[in-house]
Image (cartoon, rainbow, N blue to C red; front, side, top):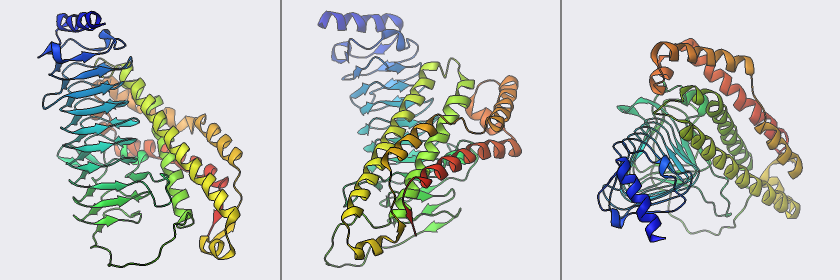
Length: 410
């Protein structure tokens, strides 16, 4: 076994991979050496690399500041993973992660997205340029906004996305920006001030700024808003956990989040493949689709568990609790909910709008090449809006169909 691993390391060294201390590096038998580029790749002391879907592309630097563990990650060109643990995550060109990173399944770093020191992510999707500071827990989020590394959405240090409720559910994903507009890379950035927090499930529009130290508990659906607030008033009162609190908003926000993931699936299925190239091979495209599927499965699982718990609790609720819930009628058909989700995953959306938009993308690619960011930002305002409309109609269609099979509340 040791001889096999040493042989694999020697093979990588012969390809040109820079391994500063080969005896300290662990590369498992299932790692495919052909998936690790020999051009300008550096693997530093103490690193561990696992998984038959792991890909490491040219220019990647792994473990410069400390040991790195990688398991089934797709690592694009010029990516820097400085120290930490990374599992089932895809990193596109120029993405970065600082020391102490703990990044788990279903996460996506699009081009030039980055996190600093001691950041925890899981089921987190960061669009191009989005930057997170240090000492952050930001699981179960999608964040977009910004147009460049100098004009990007940012999360300040010591920020928390609160994604677990007193009722012990995790139907709490937060949508920071959105997919239909965010993919066009032309929106105002969002800034979440340091030592603050966001209580999921929440939705924030582009241009939102939360002041440092602010805990945001409500949706901000208007653009260009400054949100600020102090600590809660002190108190010591009796409390009973109740799944009935804010049912309508929780269901809506979960469904809108899932609908945005479905729209992103349309983008990854039809737009991203147009950019297949040496810097964005099929392995990265497949990685995006795979991680997005993980995110969709997770959100459906969490919402399904919440709906099941809601149904069980409503059956046993007294009249006062039902009045507090504010429902008009309670009709929860788990089988119908599940079958509707299955149908929606096969929905192709508005094909004519999609094909028009793809033609516009191909025209720019023909003229300027396959630089993803340059091409998307070269779309004129009319075409960009048509692309957003194509995706937004998909979001609306998915949302409407899912809401139609869930309970009706005031």
